[in-house]
Image 1 (cartoon, helix red, strand yellow):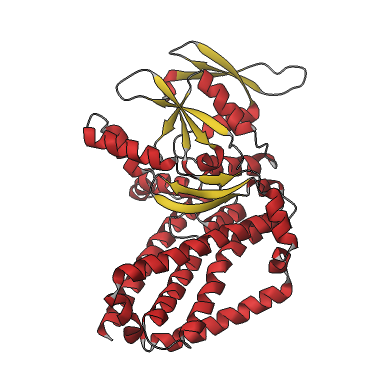
Image 2 (spheres, helix red, strand yellow):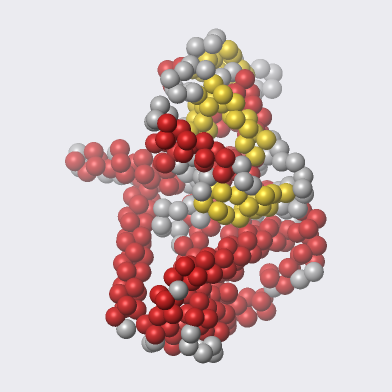
Length: 406
């Protein structure tokens, strides 16, 4: 297994003016971390006169340490994104949409330069981590935070996977992206819908064996789900190869320190077309659609019992995963969300929508002021997400009640 490249970030210690350096594997940084510049009052930016090359350059000063660094115009753009709410992936997407290309070394190089000048801190990766960070004087909070840090190091990964993906693509992976496969997949989905309708008529009887063995049911369904999650990411990688780009990394990690997940780094698709990015985003979730359809069809041919219940429950979970992955209006930055922001050209849609909804919308309503087209998109995203999540929760509750009363 190849050694991973690292990104070093500074983390300000609680109740102390010093910093500690934390090394983070690059792919996990893309998944979790949101760099945050120091307080606005602690730095100063000045534009330099244009030289012979007529390029914009800036001097960034740390007022506390009197350290100065030189920023190019594109580095200044990234610096402005480092507000503690924008992830590295969102920053990279915004960079591509702004400049039309992406240099994979630009963000780590800028982070290293900012680190040397003590201009960058690290915002905790989740709300739970934020709470723990604010209560580090509490022994229990420190112990729990230390446990999360330890779990974050549980990562099985390799950065030398391009050849393996290319072999897998040549050995049959290329068939995934052919028209006959698309037709076969659609037929399979229709068969799955028909099978699911038949199973729903006897949902109570089918679900009963799971209730008698809840632990076994939970473990077995989740185990199969994680296997298909690995396949989901694998297909993303194959799509990257299909469009002539490089798979940078593939592996398993604990997201935020406690959410097990597989991941694949296909950021090289920033150099491909929008069509390539959309197709790559769609093909991964199709694994859940097709496998769920197979499960529903198989469940209609299996005698009543635990096995039938397990297969039917697996199919239901797979189809829910398919919908969650591709549906963009659910507050989760999944495949469907990334397709939406790519089409709209708004890489920080989620963050900007929440900020406008909390801080600006109600003041505009009270003052009877209008909103711009972009602001209307932000409001629409929030409202559609609220409605969609509510409908999803109500549907699942209705399903549980229906099955329980059958």
